[in-house]
Image 1 (tube, rainbow, N blue to C red):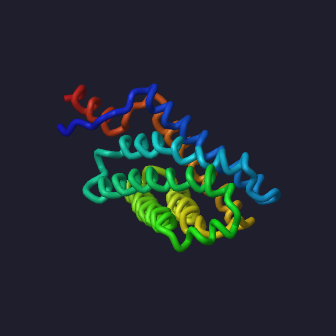
Image 2 (cartoon, rainbow, N blue to C red; image 1 turned 30 degrees about the vertical axis):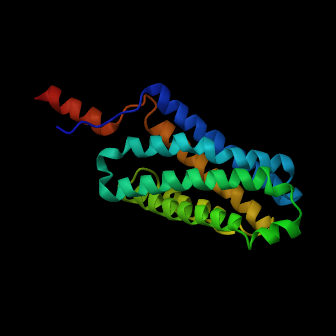
Image 3 (cartoon, one colour; image 1 turned 135 degrees about the vertical axis):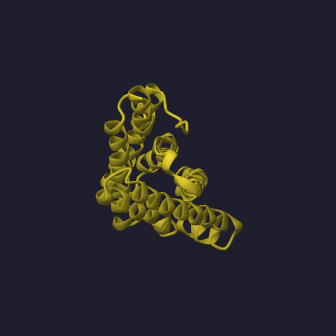
Length: 208
C-alpha cells in the first residue's frame, strides 16, 4: 500500500495557526486602510503576512499529497515559488518603496526594479490559480473557499502596481479573510495532524 506522508500534530497546528495569523494581519490592515489609507504601520503588517502563509501552504498540500497527481505537484511547486518571490516583493514594496515619493515610485516603473516585482507577481498569480484549482479538484475545502483563493490573492498581485486605493485595501481584507478561512479549515479537518487516507488504510489493514 502506498505510504502517505503525515504532519505531526504540533506541525499541523503550527501551520494552521501561522496561516490564521497571516490572514488576520492582512485582513485587519486592509480593512483599516480602507478608511485611513495605507499607513506605515499597516504597510509593515502587510509585509509580514506572506511569510506567515508559507507553512499553511505546505501543510495544506501535504495533507492531500496522496491525491495530488502531476498537476498537484506542479501547482504546489509554482505556488510555493510564487509566494516566496511575491512575499519578497511585498516586503520591499511596503518597507522600502512605501517611503519614496510618488515621483520616484513612478520613475522605477521604467527601471529593472519594476520588472523584477512584476515578474514575481506573475509567478504568484499563476501559482495561486493553479493551487486553487488543485483545491477544487481534491475537494480539500469548500468550493466557495477554493474560488475565493483563486480570486482574491491573485488580485493582490494584479493590483500591486497601482497606487494605494480603497479598492486595493478592500481586496487586502478579503484576501486575508480567505487565507484565515483556509487555515481554520485545515485546523478543523485534522486537529490531530493525521491524514484521513492514512487512517483509512490502517483501518483496512486491521480488518484484514
